Amino acid sequence: MGLFPYKFRKFQEELVESIADSTSSASHLVLESGTGTGKTVCALAGTLDTALKNDKKVLYLTRTNSQQHQVMTELRKINDITPVFGVAIQGRQNTCPLVQRDPDLRSGTPEELSKLCAEKKARAISDSEGGCRFYRKTITSDFEDVEKYCRENLPSVEEFSDYCDKRGMCPHELTKDLLSRATVVAAPYVYFFSPYIRQRLLDWMNISETDLIVIVDEAHNLPEYAREIKSFKLSSKVIELVNKELDDFGNPEVLKGITVRDFVKQIDILLNKAQEEYLIEDDGIIPPDFLEAGLMSAFFITSHALDAAAENISEFGDTIRDVKRKKGRLPRSYIYSLGNFLQLWADTYEEFYVKLITGGENPAFEAYCMDPSIACLPVFSCYSSLHMSGTLSPLNEYRASIGIPKESRSIIFPSPFDPSKRSVIYTGDVTTKYEELLKDEEIIKKMEDYTVSVCNTCNKNTAVFFSSYTLMNKFLEDKILLRIHNDVFMERKGMQQHELMNEVKSFKSSKPAVLFAVMGGRISEGIDFPGDELEIEILEGIPYPKPNAKQRALLHYYEIKFGRGWEYTVKAPVTRRLLQTLGRLIRTEDDTGIALILDKRAVQFSDRFVSHLSEAPVNDILNFFAGR
Image (cartoon, rainbow, N blue to C red; front, side, top):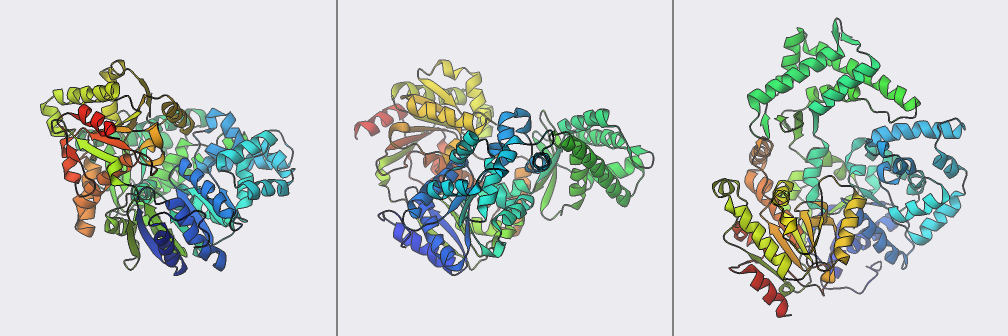
């Protein structure tokens, strides 16, 4: 308790105590803690006492870079009480100076960038051509000066990158060297849940899993993240790139009389056949042995021969990666990816995976992992873990999904903020329910009219959160931007983090302004808007998942495993997305705000938040602010 650096607000003392008790008993805790409870600082204060007394280290896992920045900010406050050294790390995509200066490298995977980095470091050490000048400067500089700066300032990743850039050094390499000295490490999810990267992180920290106290922040994201990290696919675009690579590097035999291109051609045929036979709208479930049986039949080979061919394809691709690496290029091979895919595809367990054909502009074979506990298993080898979010209910679903032991504790702490400072209203004449949109084309027009009226009349910073990018694009196609009088800023699919933050910064400073974003996106979950930076939200529909084959398979899997398929795979994630989005409105005790949900189904969530039917939304919003 002595490490908490502020005066305790409501619930905070009990929150820190609960975390400290769980950590000291080497157990796992699932915690829902509402906005304003100070989850970050409470988690650090609650875990550090055990870490410092028992020579353990705290690994604080975040979903976004902004959350990582908050970890370092709170750690500075704790460091004023008791010296605690902490380091924040991100991937080379964000911290390697070469990547920042060469856009062609930014698409590299962690493994590819690691291989390229190793080559350039070796050349730098031998003073050969093509070596990394930043690494050369790093190994010839005084490391003690760097460590002193970090201990005194506990910089964020961005601040440390700026420090290193001015001195011509590599922040990624220096961060790795600092990790073994740190008691707290803030890192993205991938650093723990990817086996390849986790092992490297543990090596850099010079620690075993059993000496780690893991904090999973925004843990409501973890089940889907864990499923995705264990899933994999082979798309038509990758097949095209394999053919191009064969043109450049040759087309060897992988079995007697059968070349790599022969395999690629047959896979392409099977991809088209799967679309014809199994694709329904977005995707379709294919027989588990569809691809293997098709290849064995086409080439008259056994399953053992198919395994050998996949291995030979991977080996050929690996030689291409090696050639590129030695030339100082990104060591990427799509042929290697093809061979790796075929090996993984053959090894998937039908119990945990569903095999799909997905459509669209880039059709693909996909093996989708339905069980997040597979990726989460290493958490339970750690000394202790804390899983926290402001929107984690139902806690039993989260615990069951990722495999937390049943005897572990679960606790809910409400937000300390005055609930009357936030109002939620909804309309009863519109919905984004698919069947109703098909019947009535005027529904979207009504939603657009509501949106325009609020944005143009209420004179407040307003965020418009869409249930999907598809719906946002529909609004844009209807030229809604021409009807909104204020400046409109936008979260676009796939935009870089710095681009997103520039849009948010411009929105915050351009009052009154409008921000278009997506429920479940980075803005709806990872960004604070205190004060008048955001006072009105418009939620365009309820973000129900599309009932495609993948979603139906997931629902069936959870129904078989837990007997609660719809509750766990539909209701729970939708509720969390809504609550996360609504949570942007009230970030401090002085904030006030109102949300308008443009979907009559909002009433179905009355057990999680209070909402009122509105016949005149604009008037109700104006009256809300007039009364304050």
